[in-house]
Length: 171
Image (cartoon, rainbow, N blue to C red; front, side, top):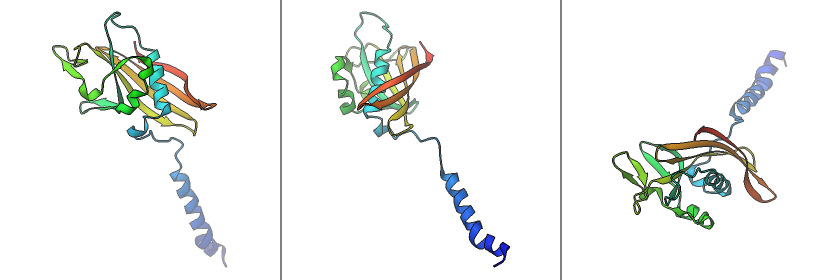
């Protein structure tokens, strides 16, 4: 068998297959679908965010609403009631984002019962980086104030917690 024939019959298909597999490799994993944000890692990121909230309007009762993914002109995806119930131990008033009201004249997002501004807690992105770690992007908004954070969430000894948090922008 000639070298040229050997190359085209055996080596070329093998080389093509290897290059094809390398092309399929992605060192970046995709973010999870929104319904999978409601896991222990998502809970840990939101709890960390709640712990970092500033005391805006001291003495005024606050309401909180958790949303998943992007917030845009088309609206927002509220967290499920089951996910929100995970935070009952914090003794905070949570409202489903679908029930929030836009209060005129400055378009404040508010609790429909009290008509007072509500904190919007956003779990914007949750991306696994390994079997035990995730990168999260979270943020909060209250009236015209806001902040965004990048977090690293890790499972260690069976406990899921935030091991690194960096403010990206805002108050």
